[in-house]
Image 1: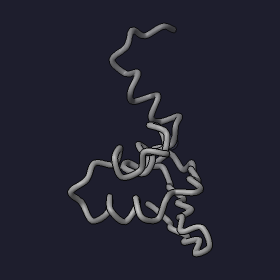
Image 2: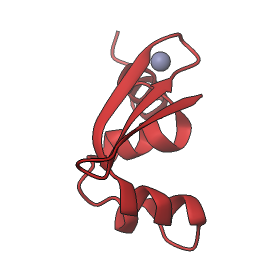
Image 3: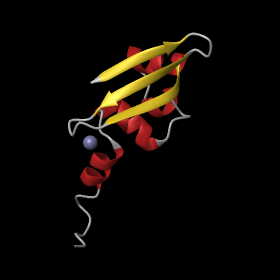
Image 4: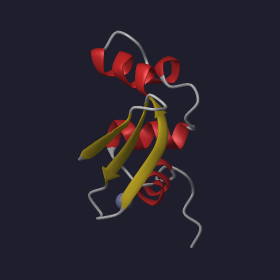
Length: 81
Ligand SMILES: [Zn+2]
């Protein structure tokens, strides 16, 4: 679930993403033009929003917080208890 807040002065969005675990991730200063282009489709998010970190882009796409992201993306690694 995503909640967008548009900041007219800077043409950016503040995007609040809610993870299924309940954590909220707030992404600030998401460029408005890039976001719109990504939403329109036809452009990969890496090109549309190059200023975001990979984790931030992942949060935008999936809504996952960084904790859940690392849980999922380390799943195939060796389990070190
Ligand atoms: Zn989470």
